[in-house]
Image (cartoon, rainbow, N blue to C red):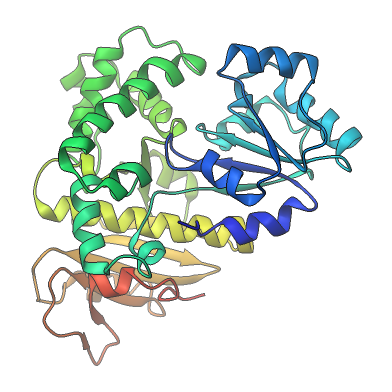
Length: 375
């Protein structure tokens, strides 16, 4: 299946190093190999490939060289800079990796101006709607997530086995490349706790009590899980960004199939993944300034998501079955009078628009489109 980033990567590959990041097994290597069939592939995780990288002895007659997980190599940025500056007329370069480039940037900026980054996400309704009925795809993502292999298999038993292997690789292979975590079992317990708390603000103090550790350790572990693309935070909106960062975030999983609890939590997680994927696309491919937050006031009233694209804001509330319009739209409209207001409902019989501009939309139909958000 052709991925949504392919055409943009092909265009930029003519001039820049392309760096594709995203969760493990989301299809980064497959996408890189689809860009141009005339490629040589080197994976830093393979010992024989590490020798070839040290010798710089790949096939230079190939049009594209794919370096996988090369960020695990010492001084990898200087390595790529030298290749790009000296040999870019011989080969185009694609780099793939399952760690966040935001963290990797701390090691220096020697690649500045030489690369474009693309963040690859699992399948969502918008990406597969021309191949699979959106309603069926929605139910499938709720059950087995949107990662290509289990999604296309559509087999719950396979998904359960795949998930165990997937998490084991992340925690027992990828993790040791970035952080020294002595108690992996406690980290596994943290992941299990988060599965039941999707959609709720996370209290570091509460998690620290559950895990018998200090809040600073919990924060560090959560940053590790973010770096490894297992979860992502959605923080409360605040005009003072620093204050927003210290307030309680919500955490969502890239794999919706992992969520425990009621159908509402799964649907909210699926929506969060779809929104983040769209915003990352607008930022990586089109250069827009974007953000994803949630709204909460001192009285505890909330709106699930606030999407901001170049100053155009959209408030989004997600409901699993409630056909009544959320009263919280009126509360927050005082602060964001120009914002669009959309309530997404599962199994909605009839879509509606209200005099104040609020919209009630079927969640499957709305998430299947890519142009619903204001730009």
